[in-house]
Image (cartoon, rainbow over all chains, first blue to last red; front, side, top):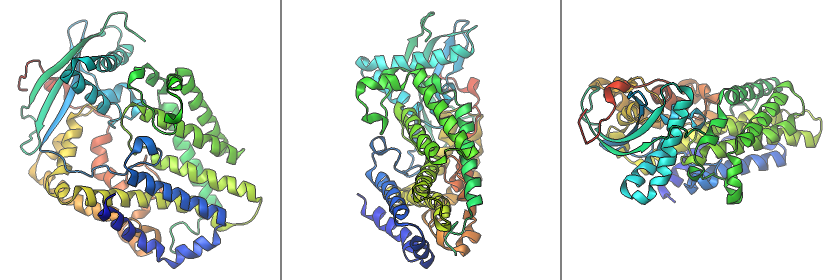
Length: 184
Length: 282
């Protein structure tokens, strides 16, 4: 537990604790409802402080935009090569919008899987399965020119000197074939 | 009374209930949920409470039929709430099914805050409705207003927790290292969602300066957000009344500053930046 964080949370809650209106409202609410309300907020705080959102969901840690970014952003791109030889980006958030368009719910585990596969070939199966699923999702919407190969490209982007058209380093991490009949 | 929404009328509560349930219905109808069933099972690690099930049941959670059943049950229960039929039971069912669905969707590796405030709103409506049902017909204005007070409290508290986490864990570095610009640029390149080069907005020096300057101000507003519950003056000055309606869980000020970059359904110039093998420079 971070002492500074707990102190600041206490300080932030102080105006509410000292508010006569809040106490007056609490006295008007039935005891059972007050108990449930306090329990709910206690769980919200406990979930935040536990910092283990997978175990405490739906009470999670509110830590977005909380830690400094590094000077170099490293990321992966997933390039689908079609049967006709065209190249196009496969964007996880767009292909599986249920997992949160614009969030990193699928992008982060995909990144971890391909980096793990690149470092240890034994871990390739999980990355391959995810990449094939990505290609299949794209092929369902465009079956005439299906993706037959997925290339994973690792890029490093320096943030401080960044310009929209400035070049940055990329290299291929791995590639995965997508079989013709490989459609779920 | 200056406690935010403490004087809310039953009509106001009803309007907010219908609004939030309608938002959920639209979200569920528009969501191609069963596509998730096509992802490999080995990448699926459900979070609590779905994670409490035995491992053998996890495959069933990702079954298209189960996802569809959860979705249809949620929509039906939400529709009942909107129509005012079987409200306490429908809200309990909604709370259970939506929590399960959200736990499944977060089972692919990244637990984030999206949709959570809307889920908490359902919890608030559910337990207050059940208590009202158990207590029988009484004219209790405070109990009727309680869900709106809770929702406002959740929004303000989650703002405050976000800002406090940034101060206590990120320290000064998070404000002095150009992190805000970096997040905007990252959102333009990392393929979480389609982009249309909006990161280029962060390119000019003055834009970066403005972004970095705004960050501590936004954080200050977040840290002090709980004042909005009890201080009418604060609400007028900071316009925290904007935060009363949930917007998918994103703190409103961050949504305004960053959300347009991060969430816009757009795409970066793909053709110009597709990487080539062998460490070539683009």
